[in-house]
Image (cartoon, rainbow, N blue to C red):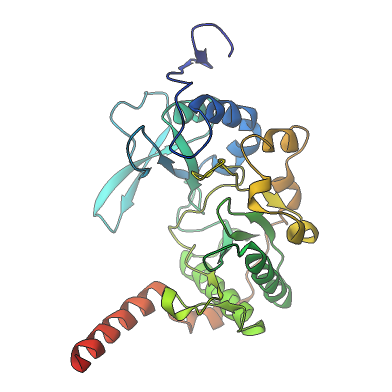
Amino acid sequence: MSGADGTRDGVSLTNLDQPLSDGADATKRDLVDYLDAVHERILPRLRGRPLSVIRVRPGQPPFMQKNLPKYTPDWVTRTPVWAEASHREISYALCDDRRTLLWFANQRAVEYHPTLATIDDLHRPTHLVLDLDPPEGDSFALAVAAARLVRQALADAGLAGAVKTSGAKGVHVFVPVEHGATVEDMAAATRAVAARAARLDPALATTAFIREDRGGRVFVDSTRAGGATVVAAYSPRLRPGVPVSFPVDWADLGDVTPADFTIRTVPALVAERDPWAERLPAPQPLPADLVAEGHTIPVARVQAMHEGKRRARARRAAG
């Protein structure tokens, strides 16, 4: 602690020795110390992007916070964003500096989920993202194999991406895209990459949104597009041991596990360098054929909703 009064960068820190959450095997101090130790690495991933966080309070289930609470200090930068789903304006934080990050840490904000677009242009995402979600069980190796399919599909389209552990059980592939692509075209390109990856090995990977249709395969999730958020590189996750979403070299992906990267191990790994910045390729133009193919593929959530209704009707008719 700097100063005996429990403040850092003007932020009062409280209850630091309380357990962070049930089963986390960490205290609130561990969270604050971690985020402070890596603030120069995580802030570039958050800066200028409306932020959702997952918070945990003692004795309560975790919750996602988008709208800033009324007691938020005036010095926290915020931006209003219209939420189509709830038909209201949401006041999002912009976590642009160490002081704001420390304030969030003191609020027990464990996970940091920024938007894929910046406030400069919320309709033009900066990255295309594929989320590799393996089936239940000890299946990280399957997520790795599916990520390699995505890498191949990207290479076939003339694109390159960087990969990180999700901090949970999966893997995220990020593809920086040149400014200008619309939300719709980015979402279409993401669907096309997912479909191409699944076609490379249909026994391993699937784009089936409905869980019961996946048949033990890795879900290549193309829905992290548009207004979606994705957990930031270097963000902790609210799981036992408090793992961290961490960049991995493609060559090393088969040799790591998500548990290798935690709030205890990561500060030393990023003390001298920023592995995510090193591994992210330069922004690339979206191939027109990829976008065109994607526009012929139904949006997964919408398709799943219609299919769910169709199955319910069939069950009623059969019943």
